[in-house]
Length: 222
Length: 140
Ligand code: SF4
Ligand code: SF4
Image (cartoon, rainbow over all chains, first blue to last red):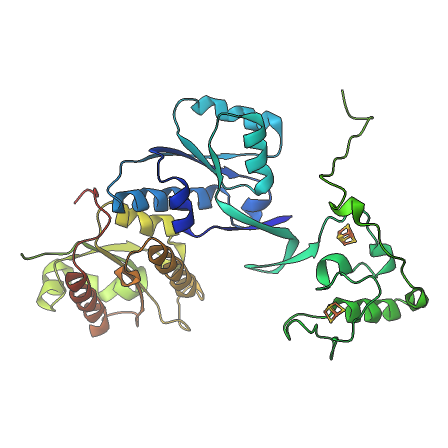
């Protein structure tokens, strides 16, 4: 899922300093699962915004709503029900949601309520870690299912580097060296011979270095 | 100018049990401050962040939660959860430029205990010193 975290409330207050009517818009997708921008977080943020405005001695009204998703046109269309009732939208979806609202409603003032961090998962309650960087050309079949693009600090293709010590990455003792894990995993599953091969220089054009990426499926377009 | 704070206390069934059995008069006789309004909840672990924030929106100058000792919660982790939510609100208050001391978590023994009254007195004193809530427009 996409991992995000709510922005500090003072940053959000600054975004809406001129707004009197604020639509706080959550998303039931990833940000609900990672407790950043679901229904509960919308309720909390709306309350904090009202308190912040009370403190500043300003009037404010909030509308609290949560869409099924903010990354599909059909769901964005449903915000029209509040037309004329808000001066600004705080989207608590990931950056995709904010962009979608901005794309589809050119007149709307829309601001991000969260910092979108990564694609990851939760191995324990309340902790999320990055697992994939969306590079557009997956090589997990070569690396025992462990991603060096997202999980090696240098995104090395021929790791580990000389800084790998005792299974730890040189950037921090709490960060595992994923290349050590890749070696261990490939040895464990009796697949280590591929490690001797040198990975060629990678073409990063699929990873965003070739501009914004797009997938168009002719079998699905209408 | 004298200021009587509006303090909202959220206490679990266990920490407030016997103390409340005395009734309001008994509580006052023990020195429990008038400024504190008690809300009893089954377990502080059930308290939502939004409920505590709402208390501020409704005009509280201070808010506190009284749950079981950290390692002796009747519901195992209820008071630990509550403490984390209170800490999250302290952080948000700080971000808003409001004294984080306006909200507090207390871990108290269950049943009758002078600490229950003492926590209320401490908050009464603290909030009286801090003065009225910077959140204006609440229904005071
Ligand atoms: S190789 Fe690329 S697509 Fe595969 S997991 Fe890593 S970042 Fe994601
Ligand atoms: S120590 Fe390991 S994870 Fe860290 S940069 Fe080097 S190869 Fe990558």
